[in-house]
Image (cartoon, rainbow, N blue to C red; front, side):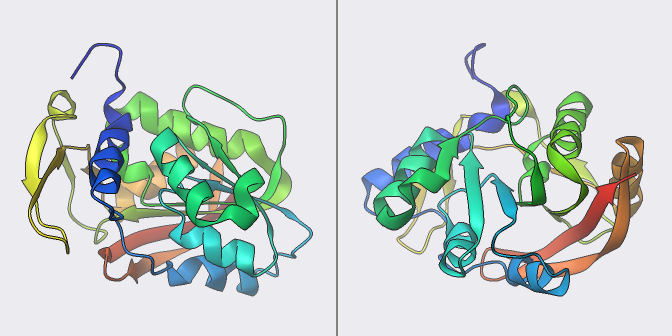
Length: 224
């Protein structure tokens, strides 16, 4: 990994590799809990929504197709280009953003991030993510944060290995792609992180996003 590359940006190279082969990295099946939370908490189409880490847009598309005012962001320019190419109706809704080093002029009624926080390994980076969420929520807004894990296991990858080529299974066959980072935490750690960053838990639990994630911990939060 080059010194000027942020370990959590390795998906940029992974996306480039798979897109050059004419495939997407993830499935196009949306994460059910996103629209479930939007409906259960009565988020209205005219309210402002933000997605952090939209990837190839599997959740963005469903939200946008349901008429919501969504700004979908990702650190990967390749991912954002993919979304714009495959969803030309919504090109203005997608933008490149590193939530750890940038801020936005807007605040939002609903923020969601699916499988983003587990890409952040270092404590200071995870804190930066939570502070971004806090700073961009309306006072009465809510956020949905989903992270890979079963609520019990804890592990962290070696960030110095990010960007190294590794063989991975893909529906299109075995492929050499950039390694990425991962940190799984228990519910105890997850709740502690949220509380320490002034986010109050409304509900939490385990959900899934088949076929990409068998287990996703989630929390719906608001400002304390």
